[in-house]
Every structure is written in C-alpha cells, then in structure tokens.
Length: 154
Image (cartoon, rainbow, N blue to C red):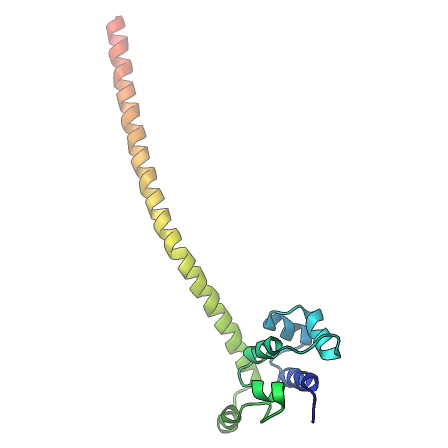
C-alpha cells in the first residue's frame, strides 16, 4: 500500500504528465503554497496535512481527495474518468479553463470594486462642476464690485 506522501507525489506527477502544470513550483503556486513547503512535504521533511491534500485537489477537481488521503478508490474520480473516456478533452483545455476562471474572478472583483468607485467619481465630478460655477459667480461678483469701486473713485 502506498503512503499518503507517495500518493501526493503520484498525483503531482499525473498533473505534470497531463500537461496541466509544468512543474512542482507551478503546482505549489496554484495551491497557494511556497514551493519549498511542497518540496518538504514530498521529501518527508513536513507532514502531509488534510488542508494540503484539499488544496492539491482544489487545483484540479478530478483528483480524488479520498484516494490521496486514504488510498481508497482511484486517483481520478470515477464519474470524471468516464466522462473523459466518452468526451476526451485535451489537457491544455482544462488548464486554459482554470486560467479563464481565475480571470473571471479577477474581473468580478474589479467590477465589484469599480462600481462604487464610479459612483464616487460621478459625485466628485458633480461637486467640481458646482464649485466651478460658484467660482465663476464669485469672479463675476468681484468684477462687478471692482467696477463699482473704480466708478465711485472718479
């Protein structure tokens, strides 16, 4: 029976063999881990935590948490494996879909941020227009007072 560490290693190799990731570093970064931490887990210098395995499975949802954690079942989930057999997709497409999903999340976050910023910008532009009108009114008033003052001096 393989150890959990060996199953993690096998899963990472599978991800690289299927060209979803080109290195352990890329896998670590996608997981949100420092590459040295992943290296320590693989080499046995650090323990394999449940959080680590869940993070690994989250970068490619077809990986079976149950298989990595306990050795039960298959590395690739059954329903996913059948779907791939009936409708094979190139591995690059899966990688591309992850990139698109990340980009969609970034756009969503930017939109959520930009909406209130646009509203604030509109309010500030309105205040600037109001202040510009007030400045123009005050200039006109000042000019009229200056003319009145110079005409009284004569």
